[in-house]
Image (cartoon, rainbow, N blue to C red; front, side, top):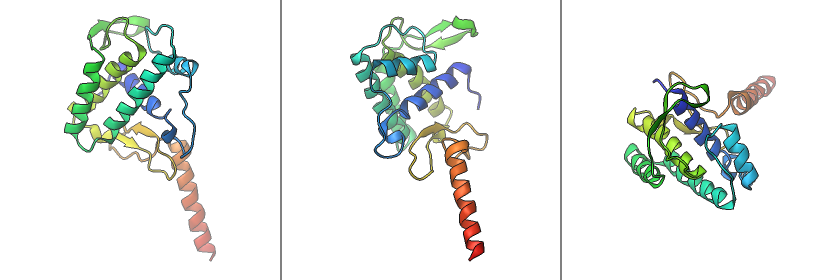
Length: 188
């Protein structure tokens, strides 16, 4: 499956957005989008273009959007995911346009010029997720299988076998725990 640079960036942004939610971490963890400054950091981390001043209304809109994206990840089938994405993308007032900003080759932005950050994310990230549905690859939208971790991720491995949000943290932690359990069992 070929994923263009801008689609990959949008997928990374939607995963990061979902993982800012309190349930993205261990139960009881705080929300990582607590104020407009945190939202500004998020937009900077993902090089989201055309973002002006951000306020509490933008924060509320992005947090509501985060909930809608979580529903797409949790959709029971492609039809439900498509319905959710169609509604989400339409609400953003998409206006596809070709652009070649910041040293990147030609690519498509789906948000309208001057769109709010929530509409920007809804359009670009919604379209990136829509591309996965169209390609028959929605099963790549996953939640980490590590106990106590609910992070989302997009499994872009060739054989669709990724189980953990991070092999360095969750995957390694479980492998070490399994190793120690085998060592204890062998010692008994």
